[in-house]
Length: 543
Image (tube, one colour):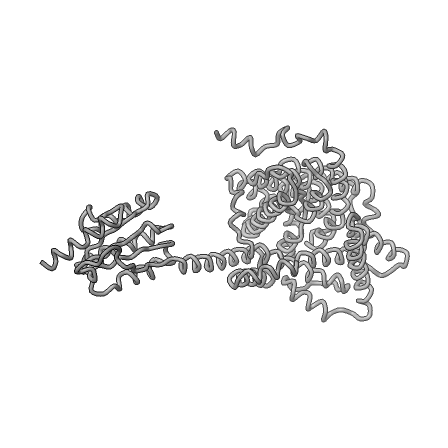
């Protein structure tokens, strides 16, 4: 069984079933995604602080490894905006040399998560948390580009919003108008092509146009700088125990982000077209190997890229051959056109990232979240605020906690203990019998309130608890119910229980609910016998 489970995580010929008929579409999709990915790989590398080379190497190496070993047939992997947001402060604190090491460390953690079959964990992240997280990333990426868009160099705050404000206050006018004009030109070209020629790679064309104008006009715009004309040789990063100890926390944060973003991207891709089953555990294994491989070649941690994956699907990709072609296209750029690419202005890359960030914050999606209810709006707002102000992984944790709080509150409010009228013809002494039905959930968030409602019944000699409507009970609820039975019995109130569901019986017996009854015969399957027994108790007490 274990061998079969392991085989399901490894590549097989089944991955390329249908390639004979789809290879043309896959080839075209790979070429398209490669052109789209080039400016993003460069921009994300520069923005992270690791450099354009690291972004390009990551897109090539990690893109190829994830295509072969990943769990999605159409996922495209590489550097992403979310990863840049996490890496930038790490680079600022630990230096560029830590990037390769943290890539290997985080990749190992993601790989282990795949082997431990943790791939389904992303399904527990609520929609408002995901949207708040995504919108927050968009805000951070946009703010991170403000210094480059204004031509302001130097050290700034690790918080993107504060750094943007510092750059605005330090900008030299009217000199800042030149990079701003380049950013605006990129944005205009991308907007126009996005509206009137969606089939064209807008970011690639925008950067090419601005770069050409800057070269002809000899505009004073800083460029990417020299790029390698071949892939660097693989090498193990320096494993300094002191450095490793300082990177353990950041490595887990990077790994968590890589896992979450990759699984979300694969899930989104599965909704865009019928491209086959997504194996979440294999996806984690593939992304872990991709980040390890990228680190060995001097790159940065990789994740599944939602935007590039969407382009891949919409371009007609059917198999993972398309993602592999995308990586090969980028490798050809390094081998053939590195000199040309090195002349791209940094302001043009900032324009691409600003447009990418703006598209991450969808007004229609935000409106839908805000209209879906106060609790969803609150979770969205909290996640967004914490993402921008503090940390991405902390934001997900706090967002999950907020979502859990509101969910438990709703579950608690949907639960209740209600006193019912006794069925049938009234009998003498019925006022001394209290019939309660417990519905919904008896769990730690609702147990105390429900128990108070029942124990507060005045002047009764017998309490009948109807449990057939109880949908959920946890250990806290079962323990509270046992304590209630004991407390009522000590007061001389006889407790009868009707309708314990089969799925709850073992827990209620283990925690003493059944054992707390005065007599084993006080447990009933139907209400009529329970009511007759209760009336007999009252008659004996009056006799």
